Image (cartoon, rainbow, N blue to C red; front, side):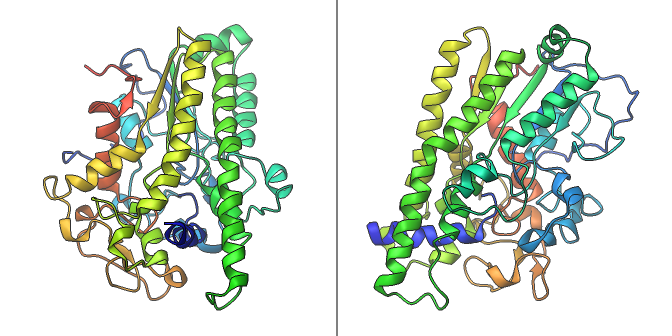
Length: 399
């Protein structure tokens, strides 16, 4: 099991983070169009990484492996790339649609309409700031827009658009605040700092580096969780009354991880065909996060603080793949990528790079690029979370 766990963590190097058929969200509503509030929600404020970024990294300037996310075939299902890491819309878009709100504009979109919320999420962002990670010898390659930076942008935005703390509290009383998913990139970058030397030979030196990477990634978990819950605490202190805090995906079920590990021992996999050891790591994060959420609930008994169970919603989507129109034989196969095989993932030829191609029917795939979900999978996940009880307690009571 230790060998499998160490091998599984090699996959962290390749990830930058990390139901029923439902229609895509409608185009952005006009700024002056009247919005009918669902359950009193008139705005959404979102923090996170590539799972919910609707264009902030695009405006910062994407580099490295993320540069491909800013052009086609990303966004091919919605007429062009918008900075969303998918072929189309994300979970946050479907949630906004279900609430009858306009799609969230990215904070860095100068001149955009923010009257019904703002998206502060940035692809590649971390829960801990760059300085804190640097003290641990961990470099942040894609963006410095950590959760703390996003939170400060939120405070600046609210101060500039309201008259007083009381007015902020009143606005937040009618808002839904999404704190994450964020934190996966902290682990990815920590392990990357200790990646095996070129060639990846299975020798004692490289084994030692891998062991160090695993230990450092695991040691980050309490700090990452603390960062997320501390941000939520600040938002609650400012007046937020409905907060959603998502957990991690089952990382052992994600094609990029599975391709990097390429484990041939059947004992390494669970009943869902996922890497058991890597899922245990994701669950360690989720268990600590839920403990922190319980503490928040005790401190703010009048607020609704919901845990969005990305882990088991994703597992349910895998289990029901055939019933819901996904290609059951390609549950862990990326639609867009290169390399073929069981996962269609090649780190050197990721979606959008020369040599990569797109599958004929993206709506039948769960994974878009080996890391992120297709538009349809995002729709399924949103439905499971906010209509089928995988976010608990329910942050919104839909009619």
